[in-house]
Image 1 (cartoon, rainbow, N blue to C red):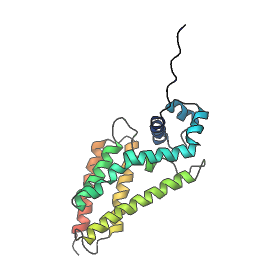
Image 2 (image 1 turned 90 degrees about the vertical axis):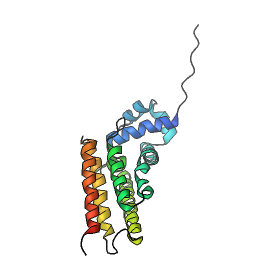
Image 3 (image 1 turned 120 degrees about the vertical axis):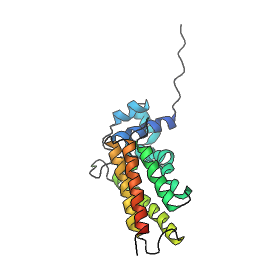
Image 4 (image 1 turned 180 degrees about the horizontal axis):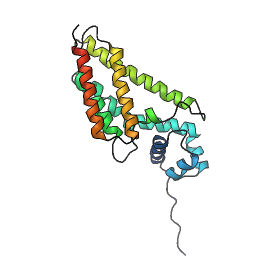
Length: 203
């Protein structure tokens, strides 16, 4: 009589990665429990036992995304030697990440839920808060450059940050719509030059 093999051990991190990719591709409200259990290789009771609820799973998947995919884009702001290099690195990494082969296009923080989500308003509200914090982080880096003399004393940091962040979030949407990396990188270059022109305009 053949012996039964051991049941496969549940790998929580692997299941979380798979759930993240489903949410990233389909959005929170577009993802069903069936989508999740199929991708994660578990049944619904096991999903609830491991993660609590769909909402809690989404929040954990989002944190996993931020740590493993999102933060690498933003670290370039502090690693680059000048504000112009920082901006170029920030936008270039964004374009490359949003079009990377083997993962869903775009950014989960931007595309993870619709504002009209009726299933749970706390999900789009949470993503909106994250985006606001990202915008403030970008503005703080530009303000630092102004304080250090890289930018003029009257440089409008809020306008510049809004322009750059609008570019980044727009690239996420366009990547989801199928625009290629080459096109996004070309647009990013133009945005960097616009930022440089803002800094160099006569005063």
